[in-house]
Image 1: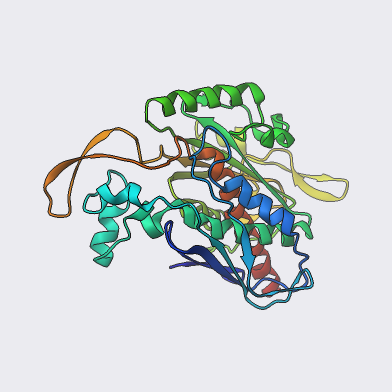
Image 2: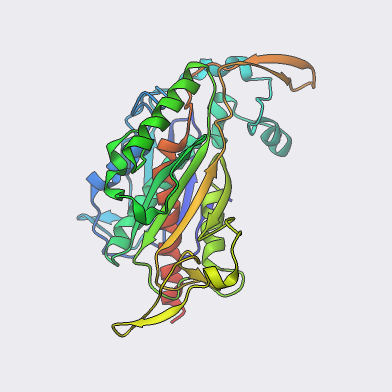
Length: 355
């Protein structure tokens, strides 16, 4: 299960401390203009070492395309690419070789496969999401031609959260702060909180909100291929994601009479007066903004003494080394956008194929 998608498909490969992270994109329409600066910027938004509140690991994360692009456009053939790893400190993980780190994939990988790459988590490392950002960037370029945009932002870190809906904020301000929050005052509170947590060697989680504008009516299948289920699968497949909700989600303290989205005819176009449904009804997009939230747990690697067991089941202690994020939210924003972009493009192509 290293392949994501139905028609627009991404297969990723590579480990955190291997030679490279890479992928193959299949099913991409031909003729998509490839903006290399845009793609590289998407990787820059995800890469480590970009601010004081992220891991200090230094990686250029420069993508090399191997196939599928000619004279600046996609050819419709498989797009192969790699991003080379250059700044591994594998020795930081030597003391973890025979131990199971709390809340990591060490134990489950060992039991499932009988072998694991202990260097940075190997395949389970979030560094694998580089491939998703490349696939998402190309999907975004395709969606741009359809006037579909996808924007995510940090809406909560710990107890610091935005209280209003996305419509109340200027989303053009997201990149103005390293935490990627459109409310600059709240953003500073988030940065201060992350800094406080980092000083203690601890970590903290939060929530990312994502907004999809311009999606046409009809994306999604009515039973087992519901659009919100597909988005949920995509987002829940991101490292550290623990929850997904769209529309009003778990805000259930309302009556049907309060949250039903009423249809009206607005200048010859059928729209809804409200959008409690989050742009999806019956598993199918209704033409309104699609919005959802993803909850991220605190990063599992903490720079504190912890109890654990070794591969023989013997009790022991562990103090993690290495370079780690105190909060994954800032670097996860482009990953959420990437997974949403690939899902929407995939379901657009599915819908087109069924017509």
